[in-house]
Image (cartoon, rainbow, N blue to C red; front, top):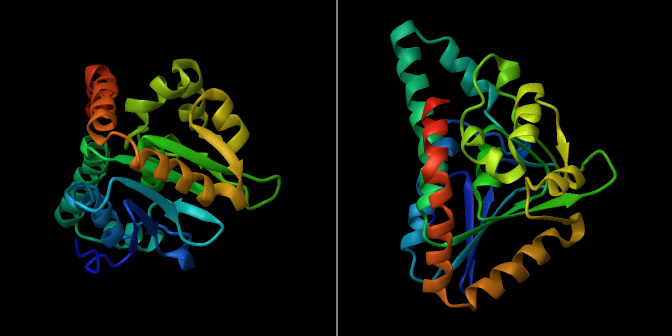
Length: 244
């Protein structure tokens, strides 16, 4: 598989593990139009790559997994004439939907190494991963999560209505999706929003150890388990997701 066509995703394959790095560190890995589109196609490429058994996704640098939508692109869309603006917004919404479904339908196991702030599309990628590992540090560069849609005047869409109630329960999902409060690693693990936390220095080694363990396992069984568990998302989550 040739990953060189990706402009803002750096893909490195070592053995049976692919590491995908969201690579715009100068803007905290914010998702511009190109990156947003790339996040809809990378999962199918990984699924079709015969060399890859497990994928790790992380952000470049040490401050952000992904800081959400790029304000420059959002501003450019806002400046368009009404019909063009409507079509641009509809395209972004279709891509946001595709990110969720492509990650869910990718038969291979995806691990997120949440190394910094995760917002918007970045948060979708972080939490739609099958296993999520978050950096925990008692300092300003600690990894933080938030779904801030309600604060911006739109419903909590992307992935949240689908998966947060399953991950952390309806009470916590409603609290954090309505208040848009930030969640640190310790709290995210406590409520079940992420799989585990680890010191920042151990984040990628820990994710790699998990990935190698899974890559050495029975692939048909692991993929069937992922598919079976994701039926919970299809039973009720898709209805909530489409509604949001």
